[in-house]
Length: 242
Image (cartoon, rainbow, N blue to C red; front, side, top):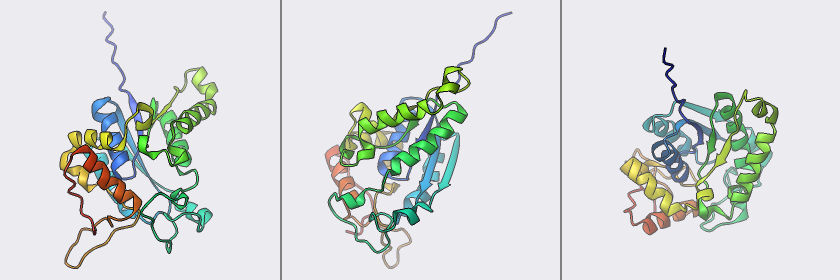
């Protein structure tokens, strides 16, 4: 009797904020690299809660096998006034400032996501850091390679006896992909739905008579978004306040 061997699908846990970079990265892993994706979204006390509200919509759009919303809002109590993304009264800069950095945010996200990946037999944890994110220490390739090694060491016995498999942490920066290239990929896959992603560091502005919040258009993240669409040669149809 012939035995039919069925190939198990490659699984990836994708960390998705609802923002442009993470959505495009998840789309790339799903549609181009042909991974079965599991999407995880974190709220950590950030001002921009709009981005989290979009994450599940995109998970459905990309046919994610599972979606997890993880509330670690208690972290805001630890951060205090340390960064402008979680501090309610802090202004949002239009250029990069160290105050934008949320201490080891990606390390926390990746660690929790890797625990999920190890549990479901996923080969990869993906997040959206690209070549233009080098100002952020926890987006640099050196950090990504280091945390990948450390997390696999943390479960090395199970990996050695093959009860679990090794997990690779990947982001676009590891493949030399910048923001403009990343959004080109995302636009090819998602089309105009891409303009619904939320990049703004604030929760936006709702004008009189409108039900849809507009992204501020002047914070560092909004300006990076505008510039990336311009460099990609794609008309930016995002709703901005300015």
